[in-house]
Amino acid sequence: MAKNISPGSAKDGAPVLLAGGNPQIPKGEGDAPVQAYIAAMPGWKSAAWARLDALIERVVPGVRRAVKWNSPLYGAPGDAPNRWFLSIHCFDRYIKVAFFRGAMLTPVPPVASKSGDTRYVHIREDDTIDEAAFADWIRQASAIPGEAL
Image 1 (cartoon, rainbow, N blue to C red):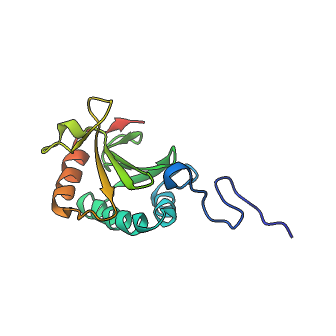
Image 2 (cartoon, rainbow, N blue to C red):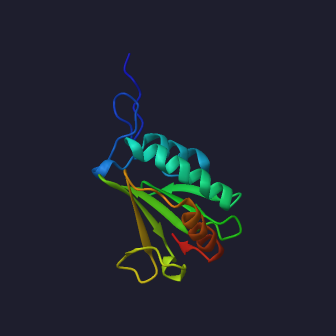
Image 3 (cartoon, rainbow, N blue to C red):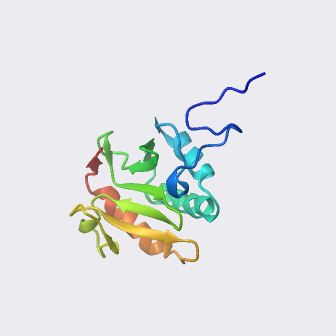
């Protein structure tokens, strides 16, 4: 009997990993697609982001989640449904965290973007994450109207 393969799935049913190891997860709203993305993140990235996803939930109770363009998005519960304050994306050697209004955060996240507003944090395998500082960025970012996507 032939096995039914859904879009974005390998023959064994596991999510396809795109360039840089970014999981190809079907677009969807809510926690389930984001948790599927986290589970499919390769190697150390899955445990690292699972810890930070839980931190986001503690800092922003009721945070909205979605997967679009093969990237998890996070939105403040009181913000418009199409507005997001943060996204992530997997690359070979790091997780790229995008704060869409990051230029307004204090201190400003360290990596500049082509957009004047967006700032990035790159998380590498051997990095020690200052969870208090990360939580402060999350708190600040979720209080600013998000980026419409």
